[in-house]
Length: 145
Image (tube, rainbow, N blue to C red; front, side):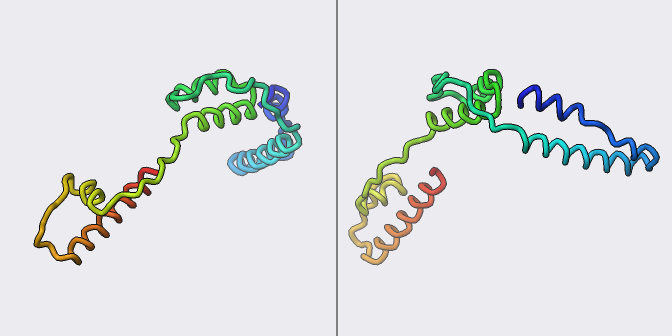
């Protein structure tokens, strides 16, 4: 927020007509009036443009708490903060993993830890285990993504 807008909000005049009202009621009405006046001042303020240079930090791999501290320290206005947060997010978003098609045995091995060779296993049991394993892998992918 620029200093002029802050000063205008902080120096809003009080409503002298409320001096004869009950203290609590006057407080509530004054608070409401101040909120509305501040919102009107903010709405009338010109749109801020970012002043920070592009990629002023090497954001890749930076912890969010450190990025927040740097943004809070170096942003001159909300437009700068938004720009820097977007740059940090873009530099640290995980790239989606490439889709890999697994065989049925690889899916079972991924779930159970090792291929389960059971020559006497009926075909429908193996198909059930494969379907279950695919569902588990899909659920893990949804939670991770």
